[in-house]
Image: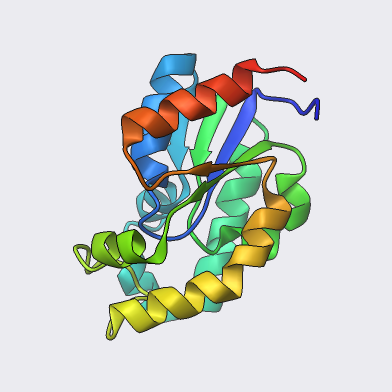
Length: 169
């Protein structure tokens, strides 16, 4: 696996720690950090949950893809992707080193229920997380160059990632 590691994408479920880990990882690597959700909000000047409610998921996904395509023209970057980005961008993800931050369902549910800004998780969080998880786990695994268990702690997760990145096999 000798993939370009100048462009790193963090993929995984909402609540798996992509933004937190991405920020810290980019500092360690001295790379630029981008969070696709933050970039969307900056560009659209509106919160993601409002994009979903006013313009719908299809519109959101098209903006997400456009922003992601722009980011993929850069090097020495860490991109924290939205949980559903993999669905429409598998081909583009072949151009980056993808780290699937795996988290067990209990932890995902716990983290996601603390945040009411997640548009696909609005009512019964635990059921919705479980459904999304089952729907997406195969595609995350397919897109991933490595899978890291992000259940324990960000510090531990970063250590594992750096070990993998520096392990040029």
